[in-house]
Length: 139
Length: 139
Length: 139
Length: 139
Image (tube, rainbow over all chains, first blue to last red; front, side):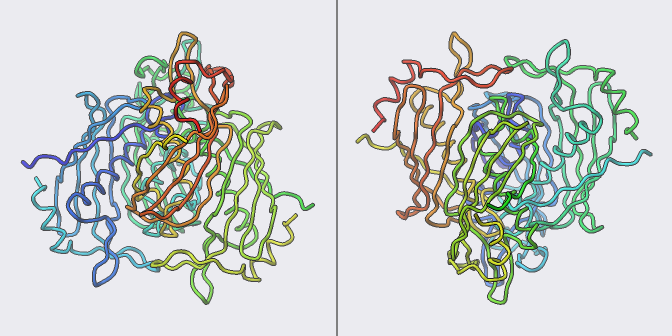
């Protein structure tokens, strides 16, 4: 099984709420930021141009389970894995830990799409130059 | 089966992204806003005081599946249902439609907790004065 | 002096922070939402198409002064006025009150621009069909 | 004149909007994140405990002027300076540049306050252990 892509995120003040803890939706933002950072690490981007126009990755599904609370300025360890590399989509999993304790785990499926400003996104077989870079990370 | 609680949300400009559509995380915010509006409709709040201190509802799980894209200023119909009323938690489902077309469906589980600024939230049997108001909406 | 455009905003839970009050940046979002609601009230939009392409209103300046704190579920009265209608820009002011007490006041200048996905926004004399609708609200 | 505190921020996808550029409110978030990072750099925090309870820094004023647009994944250079260190407040200025070109400049005044969950924040003379660390950065 390939190693995960690892990064960190610090809980910003704006990520907290009046319950004094990081708001659950902050993890959804961390998941997306980690996906994008991972694509940059591979020399890719979530928003790319090729000869046919603009390619992006709208999400078809996202979920997150919460096991613990974190507070302002806590630093999170984030592990991204590719659970499934499909012909037109990628499913990522995310594990969030704080000082070795799991605090949240997420899953997100992004579909490779052609973007057009005047039509809905249209799914696309993941181009080879992208799939070749993702494959080594797939379980 | 009880009727859903119905409300609407308009896609604000800040909810959009450079792909020209509502960002997937905006639906997570709409889900939470709808839950809170529903609790207010029942004369409750997601943040209440009783004799024992502060009660709130941290989420243990959230998910959303996306079927279609919506754009700035589109108005969404939102239906909230209580899928399960547990002894210490509530599981809500959400259906988002735009002009009669489903665009997203979500599920969120909130756990009734006692809040203390210096300790992690601690789960609590849903007090009767709350459970009595939620029960008629449970399927 | 023309009457202000009046609307309300409720402090959502996501608008609060670990200090237990509405985060100062939430007012920046309320200002923009109010501007957009005002434009819709006039039959306009902050993002419009005409024969020349897409017109939008990037901000060149925003400011907000805070006089008081508000909390989750507080309802704010918002008054928008047009302080200045320029040939290429509009300066709005905003007054936020909670139960009759001023809590914040803001100012925002938006410039009428032609948008092109591959170039920076370019300023534009406000088209007559827009200026005619704004003028009655200008002081 | 002291050197500024320097950091960088990358424009995240969630920071963009349907005009294809970073939303103006993202800079307000970057300003606050930079203030907090600066305080951490000094061994302080925007949310501290002392013998008298909780100290924080609500903002009384924020402003930002925009000179240019930036896009997804652009990296911003951020310079923070202390324009004025008052007895009860700090005024920061912020300069944002992208590849050497100014894109935004901001100013924010934060007031030192004692927090109490059941009362409005109350201003406080900046304690010496904090003022001593800020003074070398004041112009």
